[in-house]
Length: 166
Length: 437
Image 1 (cartoon, rainbow over the protein chains, first blue to last red):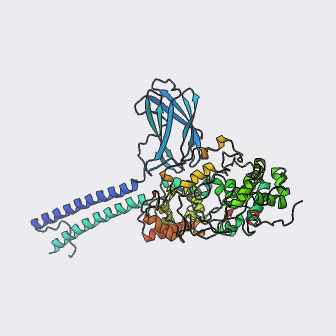
Image 2: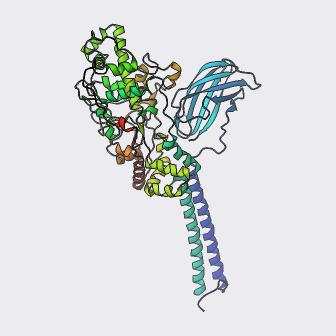
Image 3: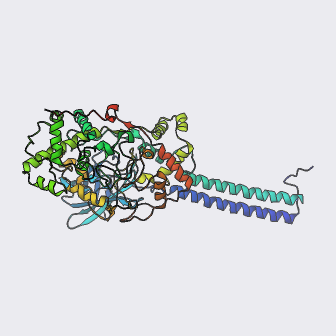
């Protein structure tokens, strides 16, 4: 009989050493698999945005002074279409913030370039509402838009995340 | 001996097996992420990108509030005649259609444009430009009609001047003009040649005119531009094989999805929207963001330094025909692009507008002064990403292999498509030679 079953007994010593080598091979191979799969996964994830990105349109400013929300003039923000927003600013206890000086900035964190336009707050509309004109996003992806709010005696800022598709 | 060999075999088998699985995992991981594998499925993100590039995503033609005649059919027909009428040039041989040739996708296929002289820039196509807020490589104009007026007065393009053009309208196009724009004023007392040009004599004649005459002449000149723009608005890009592919994907037509693009073209598409990062600028259904970028394109030999948007931004703000000008039909609220544009800054130096990539393979040579003869040269440039001659290049080396470069070029070929316009707009119209009245 030329076929040998696995249970056919070699010498005890030889068996132990071979088994040991098999285990080492399996563990090394397993580790390699983990590292390589992780590397592959990381490369595949490089072009993606944080999974827990907060894209809320209402946020508290960084120091908690104001609650700020925005409403775009477009139903859905379309790529490459210049448009305006209405920004609403109120204090933490819900009082509208009147006649603040507000500046706008923004960029695309993954690409290191800024907004294609220079948007401005052009008008105070009353009731804590401000008109922001000249917003434009020229590519899909993750954008941030930052407002600095200066009421004369206090300043604070807020950064909105936008995830633009299409 | 026999047991020993069995265990060696088992050892090798386990090792080989784990290695195989590890390598497959690596290939799968990278392949999925970078699109090296021509996998059957696109991720949701990729699918959204493909849809955004599809011609079906092109919105309806945006209005041009600065041109009250933009959608006037009569104005378009008149504009088409002006577009091809070589009498509107200093030597009687140059029209818009000299460089924007219908048979060549409304460009001329040469590195630098040739009018009555030679310009320092490559002719851009007219197709699909109605969607752009900016014109020329540097955005020194902000509407199709304002753009059309630039070459008419440029000494190396049409080489004519404002009173000359006004006299030509009176002589050959009185009826057509008046039917659209209203009565022409009496211009018989005006000099043959006058205009705000570098030429001393023509400039002096212009400055000697009363303000009312200058305005009357400029009004006619602006209307010529508006008629030409009404024509150009109708020249749009038609669907390509790439569009057929996305349409099949969207419709879930597996058969058509498999047969529309070759494996190389598909691989090129994956690279285009992935590793090669082309969609950073060439995005949307026209494959351009219509913005301005410095990509380190070299200076053209024998041409003066070109600051691109660095100069164009200042020029459009000062342009007498911009959206906020007296000759524009738009209210200030309708000029957001101009009012909120980035007007200055180091980042504008040597920025140029990315052209649409639709039919790009049929539209060489490439870049703002035709620096690159072929798409191979273009891809070699982006792959290498050299420093910009001035300002700062936005691009990074791509590390594309020759095979990948070839695949991207294969994909770009799938963007070839016809002009989407009624056939009558693609012909040179019959130009009346008789004098009107």
